[in-house]
Structure formats: structure tokens, C-alpha cells
Image (cartoon, rainbow, N blue to C red; front, side, top):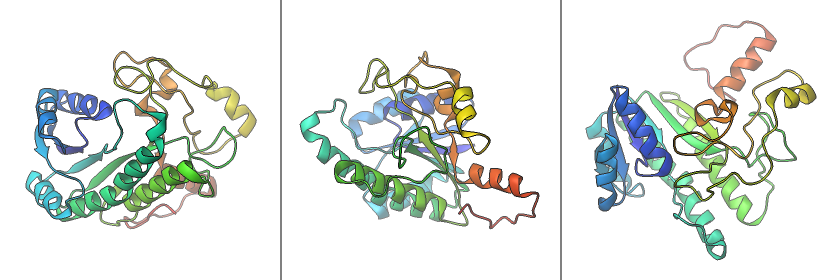
Length: 257
């Protein structure tokens, strides 16, 4: 399968490229830095140096790659976070989630890709945890948190809004380990899923909590919180609601609400 990984030089992107290439897929990996193209090639992908904010150049490059699937791993995060620069980091990262996603979706449609899988995050829900994946996001937040929330809202809505493109959103838990901001897990330990379900009762999958496993092998954490198990937003919740409501006939144009 032809797969394009946007953000292939990042912590998750490099690992994802290696796994896809090892599985026999033809992988193209984007990076905005010519110096990082070497890392992308070493991971097993054909490097594509392009600026996500250059919409025309991006569309031409993606069309030339002819991907069947696009994986959106784009972020604008420094290797180390200076708390004094946190506000600027949030603004830049929100821009890539909004404007960058808009350009990538347009490029995917032009290239006639059939699926777009995008990373999101799982700690921006409104109210206290634990949360289910269809709980509302904290759109009433203020300050830097609001910047992050609205960036995530823009990303998720754009990925899921195009009828001709199968959009999937994965809300990642917080990561720790090699290449991340945290060498060790921080914050509260994740609760056992069984105990959380006992309090909430039946329903859609529970959203992952912090901390999640290491970004690099070996994983440090329970199998219940590995990135491959991060819950899919939208379609899975819609499917679970359909099951509770009874069987119904679905057309290819059905979209999650």
C-alpha cells in the first residue's frame, strides 16, 4: 500500500515509518527540514521536504506521491519545552492543527487518497475524568488551554468532514520516554479500565488517561494504553450508538455526528 506520513521526522512519525516499511508498505515521509530528510530515509521512507503551510507546493507533492492513505503526525513542538515559551508553543501548534490540517485535507482530496488518519490528544475534555471518547471537549477553556482545545477541534472537524475521504482521529494519551518531554511518567497513574467501567457503566470506550506508554521501544506501560489502542473518535462512537439503538441500514455517505 502507498502511505504518506506527514510529520515523518517526529518522535512518533519515525517509529511509525519503520513499522509501516517493515510491513512492506511503500512509504513517503514529509519533513519541512532538509537536514531531517536523512532521518526519514533511514527510517525506511522516501523523504519529501515540504512546508505544510505552502498549500500549492504541498498539493503538488502529495499528488505526485499518489498515496492511498495519509497519516497526519504533524506538530510544531520543540525538543525541550521552556515554560516561559509555552504560550508561543501552543499558538504555533494550534496553527499547524488548523491551517496545516486544512492544507493536508485539500491535498489528500486532490490526490484521491481514500483515508486520512490524524493524531489528536486525549486530555482536553470538559469536566473531571474519567471520560468517554464522545464526551465534549473543553471549548469553554481560557488562555493557553483554549488555544490548544480550539486547535484540536479544528483538526478533528476538518478530518471528519469530507464525505469522499475516510477520516479517522486517534486521541493519544500523554507520552513519555526517549525523545519526549518526559523521561518517566508524570501525573496520576492510569486507573484500571475495569474499575472505571464499574463507575460509569456500559457505553463507548473510555478515553486514555495520562500517562501513556513510552514513545519508543520498549513500551513502558500497560497494554491497555499503548498508542495502537488509542480510541478512534467519531466512527466508533457512532457504531456503538447504532448497536444500542438496534440494527439499521447504513450507506457509504453516513458520517459521524
